[in-house]
Length: 445
Image (cartoon, rainbow, N blue to C red):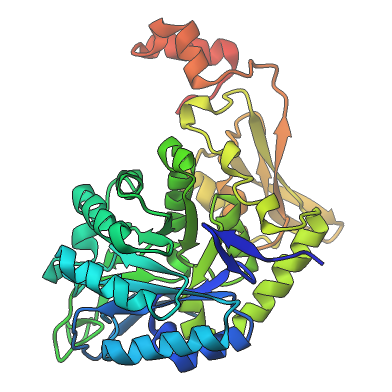
């Protein structure tokens, strides 16, 4: 079977599946239980400045019978005494020496405060630190968390403070509440960080109760912004992980990335790793289903790796990064059309409605003689007008009923960048653009 062991900036871990810094890593009991059930590592819930938590703390988005598609929280860092956390970290590492224990840290923006707590944590035998520069609520109002991560100079400065005293790897956790994730990533590189982790939760207001007019979650009649997580944030997280992993400065520095954001199963984890993550962190799925979700993650990834011929995760980490490109380098000559399998069609007509109202009006409803006694109206694609947008197959409720099929039109396989280089005169001239479109048979919308 495949070997799931990883090396994350010098830290060995039995597998890439780690618990994120969150309620599931709030105590030694929880982390030890998680390790017993198969988790390869855990990032201890952030310790540091004194806090007082509130209730209620969570708001959720449910979707068509699926609970917790998105989770909003206003919970702060650990509200347990630092001494208790340090004692349990030391004990956990003693009981599970081969498992990865990372400690998340957040204190006020003072050099002595950061360096003091780093020294205290290192005495526990923990494998490394995660600097929490991402928390978007509560702590940010006190000048910590994302208030630091949103300012590259602060990210670099605090990382430098920590690197002066840290003897174990230092991971900088980045906030997604920023225009370009590469900017703080590069700041962490300048500060000497050993690795990156991303993404922290996304700033959000979960919703409003239409009867009481209170926000969700409701804290004694009041509410506010909190951190959004869960399956719904996965596309955002994948984009940011891949952006950092593709950046030449991050690559040159050789920084490993721990990816998180909406990971529920091994498939999600594999996608993050294909886009550059060496380890993955999970929170919301565990809060929903418990620690045992890791069993399916281990089995699923092992079987997939065997099927693909991968011996270790290193064989596929970042394998999809070369496929990331800019719009200007997409092939304008690549053409697909929609084809409907009439034997599978249930005549819901969603494809017709979507194409007619929201796309390109290239599906017609035609009378079909199914047998001598039965006539139906069936959706039929006019392939000569189909632009290959793929909306129809996305709204179709029947698997494999609508397929997007590649066809050759004889038009040139050229990218936008190549086209503008060859024909710069059409860039700002709609008449010439239309002329080229017609002669080259390229759809321009």
